[in-house]
Image (tube, rainbow, N blue to C red):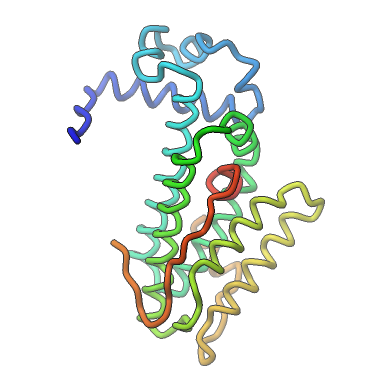
Length: 228
């Protein structure tokens, strides 16, 4: 498969402007109300540029989703490279809740728009699962996380958090679920990572019996911008 030709700086800037506009419109819940051509005017580009980069509304939404996944995966890699293993894992999982909370409008928009994009959602879910796999494996190697837990359990917790966003006390309950997950993962001799410690900044590997079992991405992309 031939790699896409790199965009020139001006073309890249215009594409990013369209994506930023789409994220803002989706977060406000107006993604369906806006005429597709109006995305171009709001982004300050021509309609030809819009259709050249994103020929359909669905293509624009898919690009937004992929961008959100890439941002989260980059954050996981950054945390793994700059924090102690247990702190990196805790910070990422709690950051996922922050991300879901902040991007719930975008998540609802994407979930409503996509009924036939299961492969794209599956790819995003797999990428996030790999990011969590790497964080947990690093913590196992450091001796701060037990080595007998299937990683699918962690992903199921994240899926469940995103799928129940309409609960009245969702945020407090979501934070409690992450605390339970972290407590359950912790090696018996290690102290916990508190929320204040974990919120200082808001290749597949396997150790011991930590595995990355298949987890269905579910019918919506809410773990990325509201739940995987």
